[in-house]
Length: 469
Image (cartoon, rainbow, N blue to C red):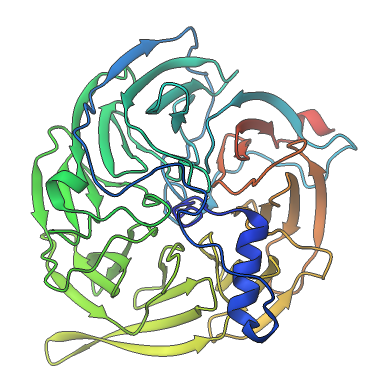
């Protein structure tokens, strides 16, 4: 995931920046509100929740692009370790010349906030073709952005604060996507050959979230993990065949949200954690059985940020629209797992509208609504610092790499800052997307190449020292 999507999106983003800021302001300061709320679907040109049959195999088109002979990978939402931290050490620049980092290439896109995945010199993106009316899995060259291949399937989707939100998941053999209306596509990661498809609405009675799906597929070994929130709360499928390995029952009929599934290890047992409409659940990675759940955390509107595991026994939860945040702790008691609340924070201390917080060296970093200021939080719930009044990033994405926070504001300015609890220290900033509109999509970093996007453009930047010395 995250993005962001998606009420904004997750895993990827949703909404119009001013509208979202307004909604947040109203949620925090209702007595000052002078105008009405803009609710999901108000700019939607006709998206409904009724699913019609979709030929997910669709059509394949080969392009002229070639995979780049370049190092590094960002194979899924929030990177290989699902924490939005790059572990590569390639020598990123800590300051830039006046022009900022080198811009290597850019590609025009359909409206949305879907983020890219990077693997073996290829960039994977789930786009939407607004003229042909269909989802498009695009495979581009990391070297120059040229299209290697694309796979298209027709589905009519109206604009609803953009269209796309999700990030593909990719391995040596497979790439898996989840479309705005919950169609799942698995293709060969190299050739683009169709492997299998699944319509969650038709086959699992999934209810498409208000601003379309923002959940990003999670590949774990030879399985892909999804949270339909219909007849199955979570499920594991074989990557090769799409065959169901296990399903988690959903007796309370909790619905899909915009959040993505995260993973943690508790008491030696790998666990998938998901924030559904009615609460948060942890299920066994082995068989999908519920290990714990709590209804203490619910986000009434736009449940977007993904749960962030903190060590072996804690999970940090955050939301927008006044939801604030909460830390929970897992404990074993009488043969069962008990969930207790460690702390609950008001939105002004820490909340998250779109992008999930990043846990780095014992501190949490994130952008809090409605100001979009960068905040560092200790694990006891105390703010260590907040960026200045002029250092606001809106609903932009952020990550950590080589000890630095890399933050893109929603107007296309990229900022480097020290990732430290000692205070906000900006190292560099540069406009990297001219006339940017809603630059909310999750970023991807591999081999020093950072891929960012706004509503309609994908841009590749070189963040290494080579071009900046």
